Length: 211
Image (cartoon, rainbow, N blue to C red; front, side, top):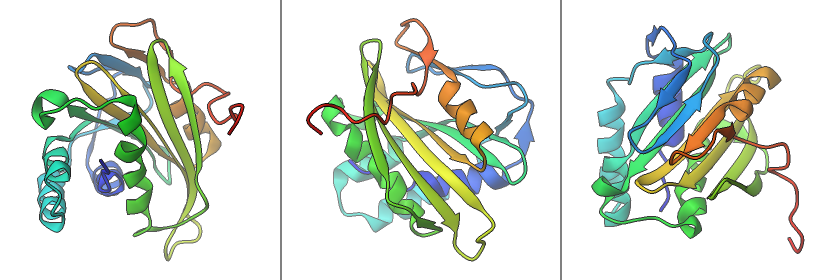
């Protein structure tokens, strides 16, 4: 299942919505937590998010994709700096979606993000990787992009996804500098109650034997 509206949420909600005071550790009802530095601002959900969902639902004839769009939740949205870097966490509760995803569904769940970016960015070829955090498989993609019409606005987009017991989740950043990218990757995440670990290990994009 592809979720091609992820970048739209980031661009609309992350870069323009009013900000609130940040908390350091964010806990999700799906059973995971993610830690951000306190100088990152938590962004409230943008009121246009339901409109984005409605537009995407109408533009697809695939019933599974429609359910996914309606059930996807913007769990966390934070920004930092100027130009703003954004970190977003999206989740898909299986109770809403009506079925359970597996590790083999991770690429399709995540790759729609970079497809949607093509509307706003000139993109470099993507780089993919995979790794494990405890008992959880992680799928990751990184791509560099320049905002169309604004060559001075350059971002590194990175998205890491996993399947949990109660749903699937993706952590995504639009990083305007190396510090923001490192903040995203080094954020501590705990999945299904397992001990916390760095979201993206340094070896995430290393080539595996036979690949």
